Image 1: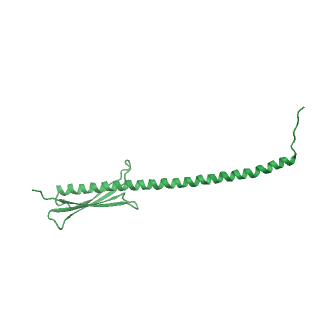
Image 2: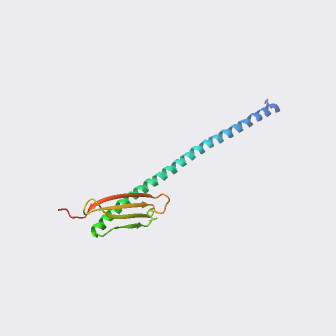
Image 3: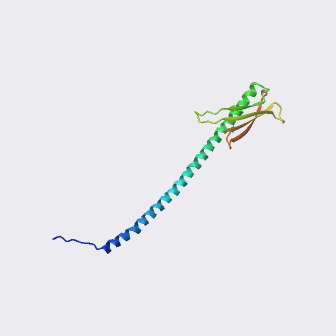
Length: 149
């Protein structure tokens, strides 16, 4: 003969009453875990954005440094080919295909006051032009145009 085990209504009510608070606790724990993951994700995203911004600024500084060196070389070549060269503003257009912004290099040639035949070439590079915070670098180079014996 089979035994039939019947639960009374009191035990069913007790088991229902116990599972309800557990469900609420599990939902609260899940929400806390999600909040922790969101906080960690927000911190990581902020760190990635800051690192990317720093990388872009370092790349722009390197590009500006190369541009000012090119400006000095251009000034020296122009001065050696034409002794009356006084300088220029060299505009370099943007090249979207290469990912480069526009640049401006101002080249100024001045006679050195203390030495005869010496000229000072000054180049100021600005990159990227037209942005709120372009990087500007200025460098000088003294050269002698007279022939050495």
